[in-house]
Each structure stands twice: as C-alpha cells, then as structure tokens.
Length: 375
Image (cartoon, rainbow, N blue to C red; front, side, top):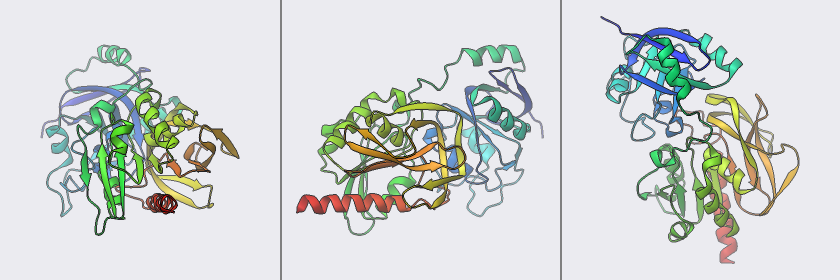
C-alpha cells in the first residue's frame, strides 16, 4: 500500500511530518485539540468546528468506522483532521465505511503518523494558532507564508455558512406540551431531539431570524444554539435576544448562545488561550454544588465575576457554572426573570449525559412562565 507524504506547519514555524489521511490536498485553519477518547464522528460533524483543524489527543482513531446514524449535522465541518494512529480495520457492527474513506469523500484534508502528544503540549504552551496541512507540497516555507497570511479566528463569523436556510420543525415526541423557537448558529441534531423527548415542538430558525419572525409562532421559549466564530461579531442575534429578554420570554442558550446571552447582558467576551474541547471537562454548578463531567467545544468565553451578582439591563445576574480546570465562566442566569445559559454542550452526543437536566430546567422555566401568564 502506497502512502502520500504530508506536512503540518504551525504559524510559529513548528513543523510535523507524517502521511496523508483522508483527502489529498491543502487546508489552513486554527489548530486546536480535542481530548475526547471517543465520539470522533460527532466531533467531525459539529458545525462549531468550522474554521478549525482538529487534532485528536487520543492516539487511536477510526476503529469504529463511520455510520449513517451518528452524524450531528448534514456534513463534516472541520477544516482539517490530525490523528496519530488511524485504525487499519473498522470493527463495529454499525459501521458502513472507514473514517479515511469518509474524510476523502467529503474532501477533508488530514494528516496521520505525527506525534500528537508533542503537538498538544506545544498548543498548551503557545496557545491555539493558525496552521496548515498539505499533502501536495513539501515546501515548508511556502506553506508557512500561506498560513501567516490567512485570517485568524478573532473577528471570524461563520453563521451564514452553518445556519439553516429556512425554518424546519422537529415535532414533539408524544403529546406536545410546549413550543420553542431554536435559533440555529450551527445546531447539533441531538439538541432538538433532547427537547422533543420532553414534549417540545422545536421550530429551528435561521440565524437571520428577526424578533417578529420568532414571536410569530408564539413560542413558550427561545433557544440559541452552539456555533463557530467570534461572539463579538454577533450584533444581529444579540439585538434580537435583547428584545426577547425585554419581553420576558423564557430563554436558554448553549455555547455561542451563552456568549450571545453575555453580550445581551452587557458583558464582554474574550478568546481563550487554547480553549476547551472534548467530552471530559469538569464543571461545577454553583447553584447546587454538583460537579458534572461535560462536553465542550469553545475557544471564547464570557467575562463575568464568578462571585456575587452583577447588574444587567434586565435585573441582577449571576454566574451559575464554572470550569474547575481554569475557572472559566460556564453558565449565566438572570435572577428576576426566566433566562439562563451554559457554555458547554448538554445534548452531549456522544456523551457524557451529566448535564441533561438543563433541558428539564428549561421546561420548568417555560411551564412556570406559562402558568403565571395564564394566571
């Protein structure tokens, strides 16, 4: 079996040499690492990874192949893929094809056979940075020039790439209890399913949706999803959320939806040095003291005081969740009206499921708000 040489060049000049994995070609993006030992198919199809080249810290990737059931969206979104030791044989009864074949079919350029531990240590010391993979050239200096000329993640907005073109409805499972307008910033398929399982009819709407379009369906609550890019660029959706909050419509946001919530509360956002990515991040719910193992994919965070409360245009707010690794804010809530968010992924495909209770919390907020409105 012949192999094609590939190179990985980071913007600071670090070079790794390996073999082509997936499509032959060249790609440039922000190099980040994911600490999940499983769930690679869900990672690849998470739209939040748009614009990023993902390095897997687990050394052996691809052993369960690819199936048609575990896609979290319509396609693979990562801009490149880095693994140390790709599986030679796929060995799962649900597998339809190999990971290598799927990457090639979707024109995703990757590299294998490099020291991913050394790469991860480098990124942890220097921070996430631009990089390029090429299996069409071995000219390091030429690829480095293209990498350093490429735009970074700060100021990036990918909502037009990842959002739905038009509204679609995910029906409630069993009896319909509630209606939610879910604004799609790159929503994962498991998210509306988690809500549908709780009797919610979910109207998934484009990121361009206006307040008038949202309220036209008379929602019991508004949800804003995960998504890629810099939250500082989300002026339209932040303005829409301010209208939602002013109308006291129950709100739940995750990931980018948490950052947009922070902006609507007049808080700042900032870029993390290397971000949180993987399915094993410890987060404490400050309202209960409980620690959860959670799924993350974010390179930006909200700047808010962890202790005490802070003032917002909608009354007092507080930080509800914090990452135990680095004290990054992982959740926000208003105290006097039904609105909260978390930075991580409670839909958790492919797990863990510690945070599934947040969907129940959203149901309770909507039910309570509906009861008060009826009274």
